[in-house]
Length: 422
Image (cartoon, rainbow, N blue to C red; front, side, top):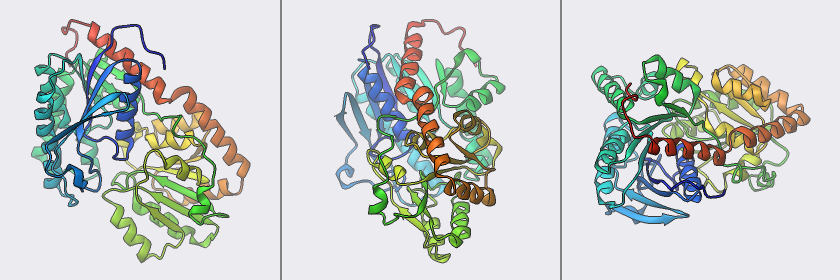
């Protein structure tokens, strides 16, 4: 990627989650920071000490408040966070609020000047850090929305307190009003914001994508390491969370035990991990292998060991605007997708001709899709090749970083604020 000819930007990128943590948020933040710095911009990432989703801090970070190091071409400032394996409403709130406070304090120690403070949410409270530091640093405040929160938390049953929901909604609206620009990762998110009265001039679409250089077909040699040679392997890679319907995926594995040559591979971690392990034992799912999180640099080998990949979300109207990044990782590795996410993701799959859509939480349709792909190896290869070509053309994170660069350049060069009210 060649360096741009315009003056370089000084960017403070605030993302609570960041590698070596594994996940869609972490991958997007790393790639954006890397490609922007490769373009000659001065990028500083402000993030937590790695612990998510296990809630366990590595020994090297204990009894520290913050740490600064260079990573590739940019600088990373990590700071203290309250972390615990016990996931309750109170501990989650302390987790979010502790990073909000420590990141503000750590940001004050940074004596650098910044043109833009780019804040990615959720968690929603990072917006407080971003807004305060943008004012103190005399920088533009840009708010990225990867998920509508608190709406998504309410839909999943994570939030039930009416008073807290109301206050969180007011805080969300405050960020939309104060941000110079709001970056949404799906068209559904931007449509939701416009329906709520946010000025369309404030909105910028920069979709989820994948690193096509890291995620590519690496052959199925990993099947031998996993002792799965001769099986049709169906993989799930990502967080074991509330939104993914992990119990339904276990039900799918149980119902497919009658097909001894079909095997499931689940890789990841999250709040539902123990539930999945318990169901595997209880239902004697010998056709299911469960692995812990795999380093980002190695995960493509495991995806490539699969014959098809599952991309599920629970049946909820809110998810019709979702566009899971794991979908693009799997497509980049030339694996056909079995997608159970209606709406925007369904349209992308259809345009790419890279998989089979099934209704969310419809186990019978998932079974049919698996058996169809298993019976037609040429269809699998064709869908895989289609997916790879599609992400190369439309969803390469390197290209998406250029869109973000152009967006931030326009913001810096725009001196007025009068037209940017919610």
